[in-house]
Length: 218
Length: 94
Image (cartoon, each protein chain N blue to C red):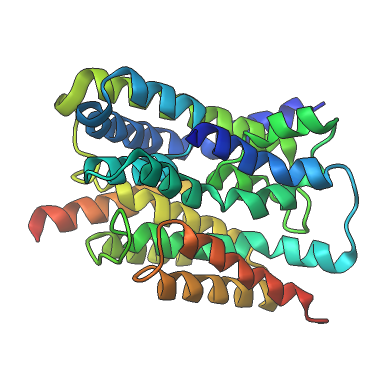
């Protein structure tokens, strides 16, 4: 049973992400509507539940690409959930279907906020943080699809800068010790090197090799 | 199709390894996934151009402001707020 206090802690921790997530969802809704109609984006935000994958798939479709290519782009973007799933598995109780269901709550920010830094994860924080982001994302998409270009442009408000700032703040609080810093340096370098050349999603997954620093005896 | 793939992707890990304790080495590797992933996300979110490739824009100013705010030990809310404001101002004047 997840502790109620840690779910609340997760909610509180994710609140700064609520407004930018909402506006990001709205911009997805606005952009997706001409390409996908009004219902499909809302459904997509609910079942795919991954901004990165949704925008990637949308870019492909909007550029005239085939549905298959759009799906592939989204899947690649989402493969980063694979190592995250492995990492969080031991921290999720219950039988396989229950664990699979709980794992759906993994989104980037929730995953890092739920981490204790020692390899274990706080399930309550994961659920609380994702609840906030989920609500923001779904309502944002709906508003974007329905209200359209009447909404303020997230970029004009500098809201797209919130995500790097947020992840940086988390990195600073999480990275204790030389090995963590080394892992971070490797991750950043790998991603920077791959972004100009690799397909969508790969630069982020590849960054996880930074974690292999942990194999060296300290 | 995408939703099935995403849900499967998120589920595979816990289903295979759930509940079991890992060796010491595996645990230390996993503990480092967060820092490497976080650093990766900082780079990606600052420079991505929406698809393949890199785009250098006002987000860099936001990142630099965030670094300053973090060095001054400001709270998370302040850090993200100043990053957004700095980026918006940069776009407004540039």
